[in-house]
Picture 1 (cartoon, rainbow, N blue to C red):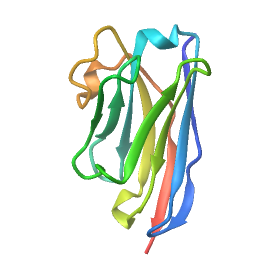
Picture 2 (picture 1 turned 135 degrees about the horizontal axis):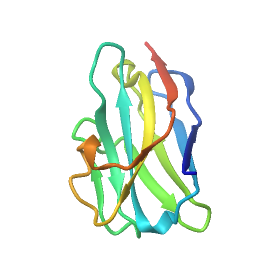
Picture 3 (picture 1 turned 60 degrees about the vertical axis):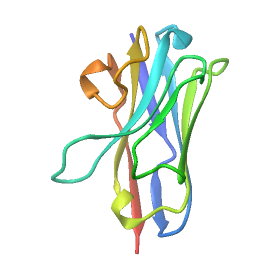
Length: 125
């Protein structure tokens, strides 16, 4: 049974930082690319960042580039999202997702096979 469990969300002031983590189990982690998405109330789920199996290919949404950093540790079966300079518009539930096969179209949710339950990030102004 595949499980993706996010942690690290919370309430932070604008300009602050948070580090999200996603622990994967039940799959061969280094066979999967990983992605982070987010969904704010009343909005569609949107891509935040993606990383291929060996960290050789990394993608970011334009609105987070330079502020967020995605990384993975294949020895620990984890993927992380370091978020700096947070803004109120970053408030959302953040989800990690696993994509089997070749790293492709990381921004498209339908290319991912497994999803976590999400962790809430709230940025106050």
